[in-house]
Image (cartoon, rainbow, N blue to C red):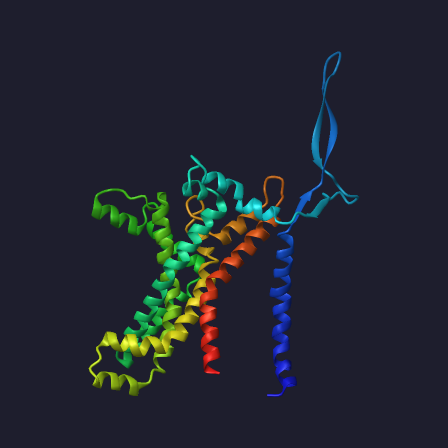
Length: 342
């Protein structure tokens, strides 16, 4: 392909990526080093109460937003360096937590950012092997069934992935919240009332279960497509040599599917680390929050209508940095395999 033709095909995609990804990312990075606040001024006000003979007046000083000629609040932006990141990470509070009598990890996990980071890492790293294992098991099971029933099985397996994430999370929540079907069944079997949503660890388990239930069909489709390209001669040779099912899976099928396993891992790590639908769907804000939800919470206007844009930007950049760190081992592996095949 000629270079001019190549650039003609690539240019539209590159332009859109620069417009909708690169430029907003640069804007967020810049805002994370800036502090945007309303400008306030001290105004003396006098309040008088009506009286029969004399009035009773009280003079007080109030801090009121400074307005421009159009009556809109004046906003001031200034460069503060890493001060915003210090506000989010709170290094001083972390140092105090690990000092004598500071409370240790329990005190650190009371800080919003570290509470969200703990849940996000746990949620991502625990669901990853479960998604891959469940998807691979489904693919192997469907691949070994009769051809006449594979179509309906594939359709049924894909249903959780088709459901809108928030709707799926709400459906799982309704099964366990209050007197839901599953809660009522557990209470009937155990003879005791179980308040699932009163315990943070139970909510976390439900959120992980939902993520695996929702994402495993995606892994299943990828692995099932990969199984169709496995070399049949190699499998038959393994059978002739007396290899068991487990040995054929370990030495033939898994190595063949390894590039797809890496691909599914990359997609899942990027998606799970930005967990947000689960927090909203399960209403877990009081017990479990994610980094993505923390960024969203910073952007909610307070009582005065202000939003913590600087802290939200810093939280977004830290989230992106975490994703890059998690993806580095897989990206290095992919790059080495690519170099070795050249």
